[in-house]
Length: 351
Ligand SMILES: Nc1ncnc2c1ncn2[C@@H]1O[C@H](COP(=O)(O)OP(=O)(O)OP(=O)(O)O)[C@@H](O)[C@H]1O
Ligand SMILES: [Mg+2]
Image (cartoon, rainbow, N blue to C red; front, side, top):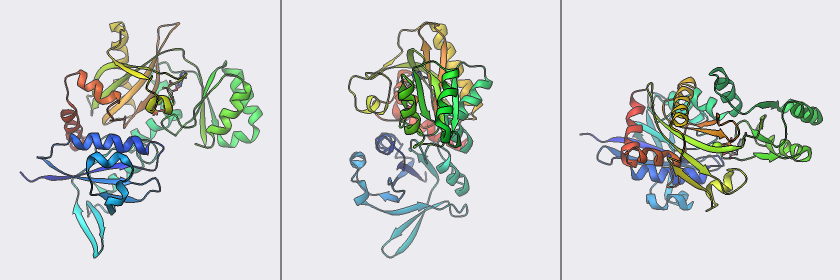
């Protein structure tokens, strides 16, 4: 059998660059090497594309750039190739499939997906629209509102309104009680998110969030448990059981997610079966509503006082590190990381 060439994109220009390097290493270790030649292509924080020639184990150490040469995916659909810049000129390498192991901006938001559509190369995961809608918290809200699934009450704020920040604060206070969550609509991994307990913190939170995006979302605080569900497939997606996030910090921010040893994840937490069933149904419905493909992780709250399921967000390229919920939820279903990665690749061919 002729081996195919797979490019695994990693790094990227987002705040989740480091996480992506770890995710990519996990993914590469699990690609079937009898079927594929693996070509890791890293994107630096500055946006420089490099074909990495070193060991997978060293990928997360941020030294990969020195073992690499410039290489870009051609947007020309007649190429379907990686253009590698060598000392003596350029070389074209056929690319049969791409696994964009990128999180956040320019990776999970439809940008890279747009390039791959232009290039005419099959790729793992969601397309342009599903990626961008799911990355943008405000647009996700609008889609999910149509499904009648409960979400935190919210107020949207556009950059132009920020000229009159006092009016913005008045608008928020007329609709929501403190504490509120202030979020850039499009950022990822809790960057720019704060919890404001009073007017002063709300002013500060708005000023911070607007540095990350031109659209903001202010939400009521949901007090309850945080539950996540994994989705796999295309038009008839499968859902996993659920996992719970126990955050060591006041909320599950970037630090508590990746640096705080006190945060933990529990697979199959103690929950009534009808609640788990509802979460799985919602996860599948939301994935279909955004026109998802391949994979996603949908995140919910179970509100303490009402016991209701409240949708929080959907991630179309969930983390794939050893502490990531997505692969753990499938392991719980008896699917090894190898099987999972290879299924994801298969789904890319049959979108
Ligand atoms: N409305 C809310 N009520 C209570 N807690 C919230 C609310 N919104 C966010 N949080 C807390 O803040 C955390 C981060 O918020 P959110 O998941 O919306 O953004 P994100 O982490 O940037 O996105 P990603 O998960 O893609 O990195 C959540 O995991 C949760 O702990
Ligand atoms: Mg989140």
